Length: 253
Image (cartoon, rainbow, N blue to C red):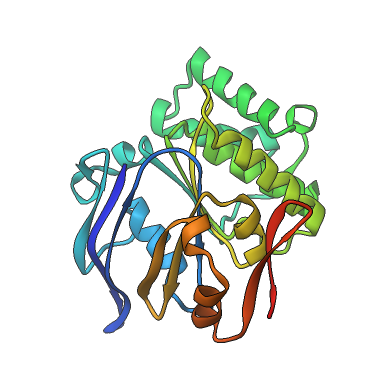
């Protein structure tokens, strides 16, 4: 379980997050939604333990992240940031192998190689593993980065806008894979994802966390918290949640 208690974050004397308290258990997909500047990415980075808090605490399975060293945090939570940068000379296999660093610190074992191979297989990258990152399409590149985060072998997978700049086909491909991995099973991960596409949140999320102006607007199961009224207030425009072909989506009201 991840628990946030009275979390506040300040930057340049400006309050970015104000008194955020919430908790949620393992499994499923949690979507962080809200208008630009709401504090979604800041909250995700605060939950990872990489961003210092001005107040409050974040605990994972009862462990306060502020009291853990970086390698210990990296074995609890993996974070894929928006601005990941890698050298163009890296292959996909090289990139995915980086996810094992918190475990082997430069001395990979047979288990580390097995996990990398499994990540490549799960994200359909095995046949591409020798390709250079620079030669990949946007969808392939994002699959490779998410595979790297998955190979970190943490129970929690935090993804900051991994769908940005992807076309609908690649968006659906990645979300289908994440949804499958968030279900019960030996490879299950708890996925927390920042998304701007409300249709993606409506279709795939199990839980919603909505932020506005650095404050928590609502949190809870999607069926209860993601309503047209809430979304209209959150984004300042009339929106409705409707069902199309048995799937929920969001449309202008």
